[in-house]
Length: 326
Image (spheres, rainbow, N blue to C red):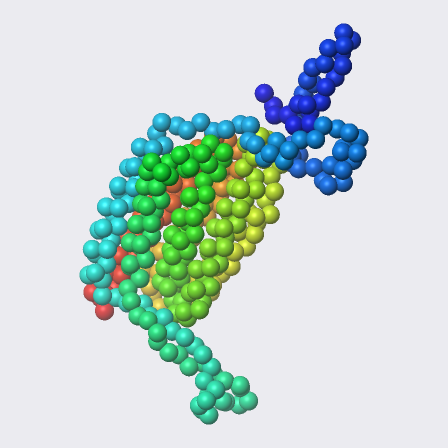
């Protein structure tokens, strides 16, 4: 049955016999929120006043499938095992990536050249193997799946799944996706520590906007109202901004260095990550089988799992090969 607006469900029509009954009308594809001007007009006319919760309560809840908990359990076990192997192999990788600062050298007179205020002077602040990133990301992913089945967290997880949301997934993505983006930025040749920090927070911001879209539009998706895609498009801007930094270094680096590791990782991860906004659109536009929220949820888990596994093992194998070559 098509959902009805609260005011339609409570509007009464007096029939010929003097009997009052509900006269629901199908909801058009419009937002459930009324403008302040329209709300004031209705109140002035003495219409029935409803609490705000009447608009926020989702009518069409998802059913929790039987396979959800076992699927999370299997994924958690596999991710923990994989993280253990990655940490073990990372200890054997000798290839390191270094981070630098490039502050202007204003104290040294040689820093001034032809009326230039100051030229940057590089200073190394850290040097380490970035293969540890993959282990941390895999471990955090396993923790996320584990929380979905633990007694204290499972009811809350399923509560939000029923209501077309999964804030737990977005919180995990804030850290795992941001670390993966930093990982690939360093593989592409980014060495400035502040550019790395900027890449991390640009990615984190794009994930937060995805979370905001779910919170803003959960009822709209569930009950057939028009969705507000402002947060989604804001997320896309942040996403492309962080990738623009990576490709700027990547294109310049490929012109000077034959690095098949960076080539494979950057291009493949970029293509894999493009599946996430695609799945998001399919899920929230309810296209085909993605009309079921759980289909999109399963797809997010599958592609997240694929991306993290690929980046972890490709980096380990590639870094180890380059270390031996060197």
